[in-house]
Image (cartoon, rainbow, N blue to C red; front, side, top):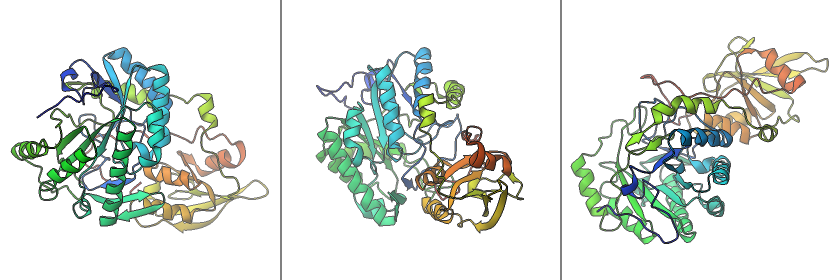
Length: 439
């Protein structure tokens, strides 16, 4: 049932996911440059971030494109058998399209022999199809859990397209249509396409053959049916994972329509090494060190700028003296401004939107802070950071007196000490979150 995919114009001989015969000779490195996501799956909780846990969506650090290149340098020194550079999260690569494509461009310039592979939910792929081809990406994976919105509505809590958030069946309709459009576009551009499907008993187990048939009609090359991993803090936390017998039986049925991938390792977003000899734990320290590397001068010049037409600054503070609250935990925000004599004044407090609601919460907050050029916080999540920047409000992380942050914003203009990088959370039983707007 397992088949090696071969194309005269594409090299699968060095890709261990598409060619199981080379999984002991060729390796991959996943580059976690895509923190934001445009959908919330019912089985996904990216807050669990332990180096000992191997599943999609997990990473110990997030990299910028230039940091990713530096990390690839180190990885190849350690394991020269790496042949594939991939991006698989921790969010969706095309909810972070600029970083994804820039990462591939930088690596291609230095390591033209590398194969490039990206995994996506497909929602944001269509508008970037030509750029994907131009970036040299040859292998794409699209996760398709349903081709019927009545089935798909159970898998997706919401999907965000631009500034509009869809829920339930509407989210599934949009996503399925985009997935089909993505696959057609990728195949038209000569790419090898694999589809991942999460087998969830009671929801899509009777629907898998229809998925396989539809994907085969679209020209998909390989189908990877994976067992559900119930994750705490998600709607599917109490769902039953399929047994091996159930998984084998459904793969047998789907195999009538498409070749089946049987050697998937459920890789992390920062997986590295051979499939049978993963080095994620060994390289975690190197990944973390690379995530702290300074950006080159030309990149610093491209960092988000303050919108000085906005007079005020929002501050997350417990007592009005220190910046000491996480954006997602703040119940209210103080609004500060600079007087004509150069002194600062707190002019009002504004209540934060209630928790929950996914990214809509952050767009609501951005609207409440629309007269602010920046928001000073002790910490901020990837999704709210993306939304704030998109809406013209620069999120700045710091610890210390409010006046220090205001000086940097209004007087010195030196924000380097404020733009601290968010580190991966430690493994903890008490981890929580999962797209509900906790920030």
